[in-house]
Amino acid sequence: MRNVAKVVKEVVSAVLPVGVFVVILQLSLALPAEMVLQFLIGMIFVTLGLILFFIGVETGLMQMGESIGAALPKTGKLWIMILFGFIVGVAATIAEPALQVLASQVDSVSAGSISRIMLVSVVAVGTGVFAALAMIRVVLGVPMKYVLMIGYSVVFILALLAPAEFLAISLDASGATTGPMTVPFILALGLGVISVLGTRDRTADSFGYVALASIGPIISVLLLGVFYG
Image (cartoon, rainbow, N blue to C red; front, side, top):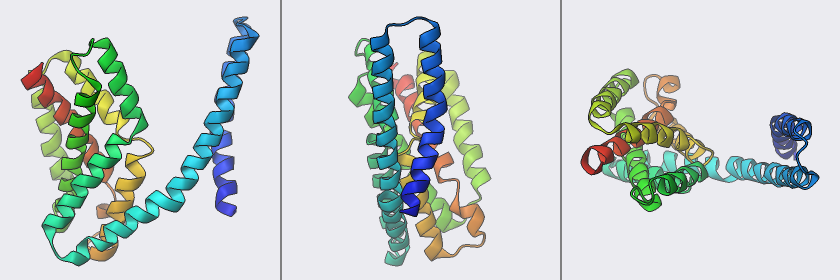
């Protein structure tokens, strides 16, 4: 119950100021009372949804992610860690609500030339590949700075080759994948792996998974722009 009360307090304190500001703005613009009422009802549903979601993340997703991460190194097989890192990255990205919204918007604006399914698939594969690379980095002990330098060097090169609209979409896609589904699971997975491997610097190796995973969507969308755009 203590965790539930904490989540309720955090969600209400985050949502309430936004709701108050929007209501004041709507009243100052003399918008119809029906619209204000709809907004308030929507805010109630959003608050309840966020409370249930964060409780589920804390009691389910993160514990499961850490358990999977702790079990993978015990297999003693790098390819299994790579495979599961890829699968987790793809699955969590496909389930990301922000990405679904972005993909629908891109599909609408592009008149279907960049379909929702195409964008979600490309971004999910990109995230999965770099989530797998994060596993390899930890096992081989490669410093994070070198992986980030190489990854963003590729991004800068592809940015010069891809059409401008794909550059904008790629950056938005990267932001969309750092949402409430992908981040908790990937972070928990990484923490579970480190808890078993016991590498040189646990603090340095326990984080950075999201940073690596967010490079994947940028590169994958830019590659789509280079070959498809």
